[in-house]
Image (tube, rainbow, N blue to C red; front, side, top):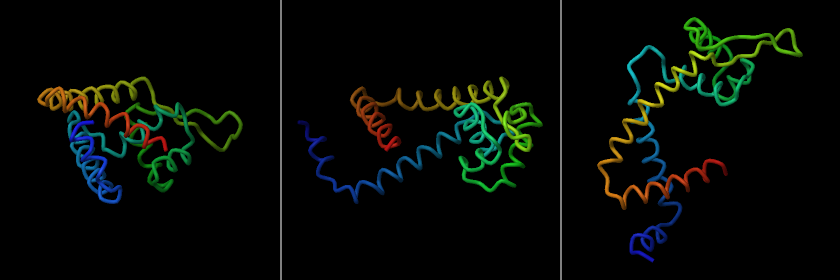
Length: 149
């Protein structure tokens, strides 16, 4: 067992939690800033990402996933639809509803944003030692497990 492992295990969870939360929050903020310059907002990108992940959602479901009020989601979807990034189709069982889905163009925009973010982060990771990158690989696995808990 390495000294680093022993030190990490001796940190009480209550002390580790705010350090980890702060580090994740700051890194997430930096990753979000490392996106191609464009007129899509972070909120619009998030909604588009949710649609790509879910396949299709009603506007209400999308608002719930994004944790915004339905009128706010209506404005977000309208902007995405104007740009051809989201399409509406009739709901198969409820004529009062519509289903929203990312278009091929919307998925391409997301791919472009993700590539830019990944390239930015890969550049920073390349400056780290092999040992530090291995620690981050292990941490990523743990964070994935925590995110599914």
